[in-house]
Amino acid sequence: MSPIVLINGEEQSKISIFSRNMQYGDGLFETCVAKGNQILFWSSHLERLNIGCERLNIKNVDETDWISDINKAFALSAYSNCIVKLILSRGDSSRGYGYKDDIVPVRVVIISEIKKTVVNNSFSLEFSDSGYHSNPQLAGIKHCNRLEQILARSNLSSDEGIMLDENENVISVTQGNIYLIIGNTLLTPKLDKCGVVGSRRSLILELAKSLNIEVKEELISADKLKQADEVFISNSVIGIQSVKSIEGDSLGDNPLTEEIKAAFKGKTQDIKSWTCF
View 1 (cartoon, rainbow, N blue to C red):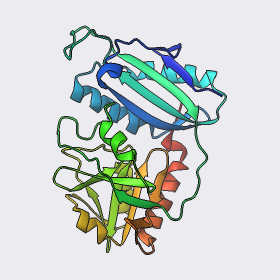
View 2: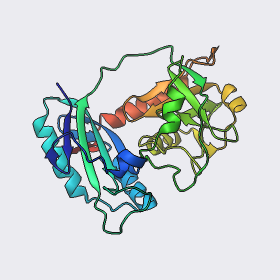
View 3: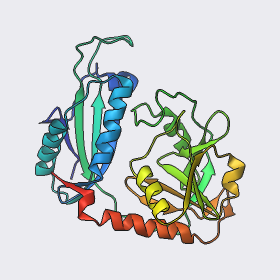
């Protein structure tokens, strides 16, 4: 079955060539997991989308409009378990980076089949050739201009690629956040200058604290990453994935990661984590 696509609440798949998202990547997006017309951690996705609108000065779309669009898309879809992708463009404009004050945002909802999860007990990382350049105005938000990640994934020979900033600090993997455990401390990169604050990141940090694991957000060098006892990554689709090797160097057992993963799974099974549409 083909994906269901709604643009401004109407079923269609053609968008204006004057869309600023198409021309410049001038927009935001969210990738949500859905099951039985319910979305997991909806409030986290909506919060990040609203933060992105404020940061980029894109006119905010009311939650009721998103809910209406998503309900229509669910009604048209035959999928019980699916991915719901939200895209928000600043709107349409003619040539040039500037835009008028009365520009109207364009919202897109795409529902597609979720791929079956395959357990990977040998998940590997490598350092990517492409990395980030610091820009605090864009740090944390999920804007649509993702050329850095596209370049980083273009020649991967491992399961994921580690992206660094211009000072060779670890920031993320191409499609998620990264965490390392040294002793009883969980460390994850500061994302105040570049990178994306994942929709699962704050929950993972909270769960680690509840398990009496010390949590630190700090600058992490490539050398420090290699010293980690355990490493794992996260994103909205895969949840938590343990890492077994970095650049061919094997990591040992991951007992603390498994504790965090079990707590995270418990949250995903909690009915209060799902928003019904």
